[in-house]
Image (cartoon, rainbow, N blue to C red; front, side):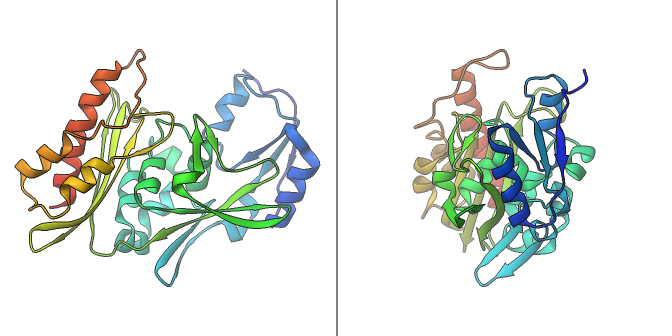
Length: 283
């Protein structure tokens, strides 16, 4: 199908983008890669009067270090995320998860910020961001504000980004030396996750000293498997200990039942994939 007619602007600064949002009002949509928006437009499930393309704003792209943080511009492509050496060294989990997003064509066009702002519960980057305690910098008419990952994802396809605001960057604490793994289960290649697990652990002398685990598609928003994290800390990184701790992975979740899987099957997947992810992350 052909999208409905709309106006198009391509600002070159964040301030210009915020002003365009203000001028466009409720009928304006941001284009941050377009891998989710364009299909919706073609199906006429949305008919905005104005599209604001963020691709022309250099300050929204790239990766940099700021002290104990690694900062990623919201318009940094998935392809660039997977190739960035700073992220591989200090935030390996986000690199690992991004490698599983869709296919090479989508990874060249899609962006980290666009995927996180879209907040699809089956998307592969929200759970890693939550597990890593990322911070989201949001710009609006009143300046910028920073929102913790735990407060950013509010509901299905809903985030803390307010009317007239846009996501400018994501700030990750450094996890240098931590192992990381993203285990994803889907029925066909490049499909959305039926369930996935993001795990990053720190192992000292064969013992897990710290662990962070996020679950994909186990609720309307990403979920931390805190019971598993607690059970792992202080345990030797053996298969028996990890499998035992992983049995608590579904605690506090509310998975849906749909054509792909029932809720009980998703709970089973969460336990199995958590065990695999933690074992791989622990080496």
